[in-house]
Length: 186
Image (tube, rainbow, N blue to C red; front, side):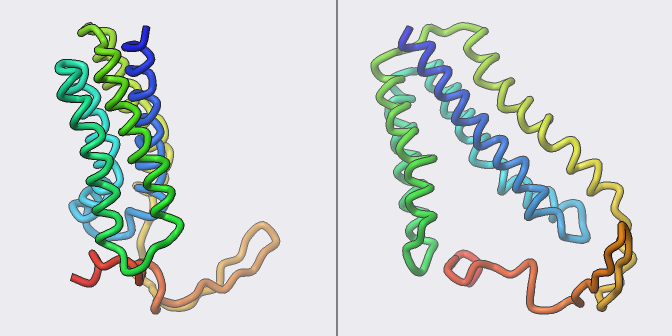
């Protein structure tokens, strides 16, 4: 029973991050003009859920190894988050609570629970996060794929639905890297 609870928690964790990755990929991403650059950005947002699915499937095969790898990755991820920022912020607590702490708990559960190897466990662990990504990325992808870029980056007036808006011109705005993120400064 503890093994299946572990599979469930691992699947929920990777599905949560799959949802966040799919949402953020199209919310913050897809602003480049080239498809390869946009795909690299999508890979950035979907990298964490992909790693979590990989850790869970490895732990299904070798529970003791997974019991060690999950906490090590969680702690390493948190250290990386600390090392790439100039000053502490609320994000450190979020990373710890939503990534590091669950991976430590998962490591303990994989170590103790040792779920039996089964096709059903693999299917749940791999397919559910993949379905979450496909389901939540379908609409924004089709919406963004249908956009037409006229190349006009100047100020323009947009009217409709009883509103008149002035669209700001190109300037020091998006995409503007986080000034606390030292990765952008390299």
